[in-house]
Length: 401
Image (cartoon, rainbow, N blue to C red; front, side, top):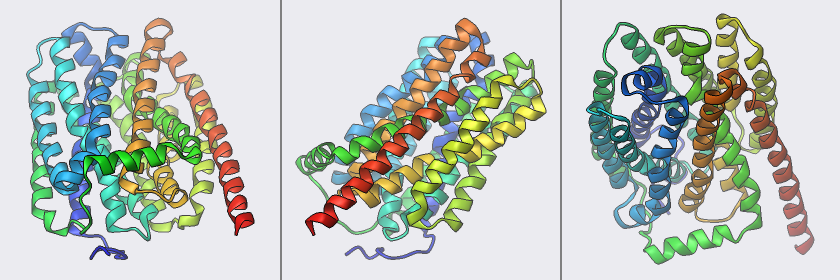
């Protein structure tokens, strides 16, 4: 048994993960808030702008697939510290980019660094709080949203004051390096547990992939990631282009989306009962669907601000709650489970970022946001399918007993 098993208090290593999420979310958000200026300076299109997220996501996805092997050999905390330093190196490289190709290379390095953070922070939180993971996963993931909030507010203000995006990116590299040092300081709190060989890790993943129940949760993660990616990546550009607003105004819009996520995740963390996860997910889908229907028809920036806040509330629960829900339902090794679920969520995030950029290039961003209700609808459908599968599975177990 781990010496941390059963503990329900916030620990130093939780704080390190919170800072890690701040750095990771900043690395994801700095491109959307700077995208219009970046595209004008380096002369690329909206479609190419959406492709930037794909360039970041491909190496991130590759690192996700190898993260369990890295963690099994060196431990989650060491791997997380290394990933923060890789993230810092990518940010500093990004700040020197002089053309689109250079940006793609820098974002690939950011993706490689972010992949281990994405893969291992939530499993580490699960290890620290195995009996109450839904609460702590939502709290720790709330710091992702805080990172988004601070990046878009501070970044939007600096860009409006004509501070170069390069200084903003370089400064975020410093934050990433600090997160790495924080993990080194807190490494003594890593839960004790077996180190797995590559063959063991592969065995865990194959065990999960053989479960039919796992494949009903995969599309939930995909579309949960997609709706978050749609708002997070394109809200700032939508405000600047369609509402002819400043980077400051764009930052406020994305910040309100992030604020909705922060309030949602911390409220869930404090109030949620573990057995209520599925009802929370479905309720969030309903709210998000209604809000997303209104966004394309809004011609008031102030009304759009309110809708973005509600959109943030609606998507807050998806990523951490679906993972925690899966950990409750599937009797498998949780690190491999969380990594495989992230392998479903991140392509959804990247797909929506590319899709909205492609539609925006050819028909305008208003039409782009018209696709978001479809993403919510698909998430709702697969949530209902999963519930039916879960009920059938439980009934079968009772019959066998």
